[in-house]
Image (cartoon, rainbow, N blue to C red; front, top):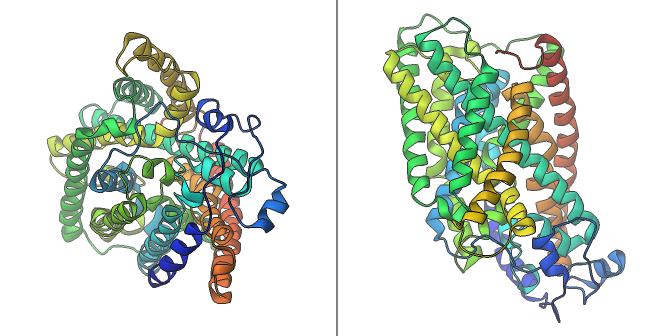
Length: 483
């Protein structure tokens, strides 16, 4: 965090030295209306240092805030709750098994703390680039296109939506697991299989998406989400504590052979960065009121301090209670009254529905802006019908993939490897280098390049490990497996 604070003054000077564009162009509306990675660019006066402009040959792009969704309306604490909702989603019920079991007490504890520190740092860098060139960049791809040009715009566009698609697929798997866990508490006859539960979860997520037109409209639902999170986290914590007290000696050894441990450790590292990062910080920052950089930093501090405490509590308690036998879904490990476990699982299900809407909002914004009529209010009949058709189709594909490959831990690892590492750590540091240019000292440049190279290597290694896990699980379980 000290490095971030030391660079704040340099950052502000660098950004102030980048003049706003001399004029706007038709690409601005294309960015938000069509968002086609291969079309709509026009030449303009470069916003960044001349070296980059020469390299890119004038391919830097004009950006506007044209969008079908609301921006610049939310206070910082609402954005803080959006970030906290993502951090304390029902995914936290899997971190005892997916992070602590492969890494152990020392590796898991140090890893969680270190991942929080570097994630806060990288997100702060990205937040400070939100107004690069004197204008707001309300989408991650817009910021990348402004700095690098059309090729990186297209690549960032692809990476981000792959990232969000996999996160949403994981959320639907989680919601299905919660419904299956409730059913098993009453009838463990195998009639209601996990794919059926996933299909039902996808349907409920679609119903919620039809009624919430954009991210800022969540408002009171963020309060409900916080309550639901506290319910399943407190119940999991208390029941794990009770089981841990009464349990015999627990085994905290890291399972698997030597070669298996290498791959599971790499996968766990990917899960660490997945736990804290959204891959859509510019889109979330777009909703915040000015001053956007200062308010975003407040929201980030809230996320990485108070907002992360529930995550630590349930992750450490679950591992302490069950050791290396901890389930990938903690509520499957706990023992207690049936009605309490039903409440916990149902709260996890409802919170997952809300959390999915946050991570699906960039796709919804693209679809609404590109294909929506732009006429009437969000609840006009034609706009509701549009949301039912388009969002329903998107979530149908998500649900189908979730039912076919319900390997939650593998999805977390692959998402962290393919998208979270590049978007949050590699790009954030490199974009910071591009914008700051000669203002950085040699030490600062070396620090950022170390991050770029190091996280690029981690990304490739973690992707290989995650794909290996998916191949192994696919050979063990058939498609539409009832896990």
